[in-house]
Image (cartoon, rainbow, N blue to C red):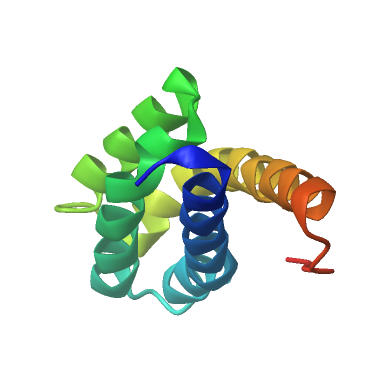
Amino acid sequence: MGGESFLVELLELALQALEHDIPAIAQHLHQGDAKGAQRLLHALKGSAPLYCCVELVQQITTLDALSNTASAAELTPFWAHLAPGLAQVHEEICVYLGAVQPSGRAL
């Protein structure tokens, strides 16, 4: 375990989750489905430390906690603030993985 191949595998998993979860959370909130968004936010919180950004981890953790009781309408402004940071992480992972092994992924 370890080494660059392990890091690449880990980042590829994080990338897959972001590619699925970012649009899915937005869709759940748009449809008024706070519980659907909450399930994905909770999973996202589990992988958040991989992003190595304390502020982003705090935002994810806060939104996950809020999602336990808040409505989709109440969560939407917080998501609007968080989503660009997640998109930036997605882009940075793509750039890194592209330097290691080109994949052509886009969000």
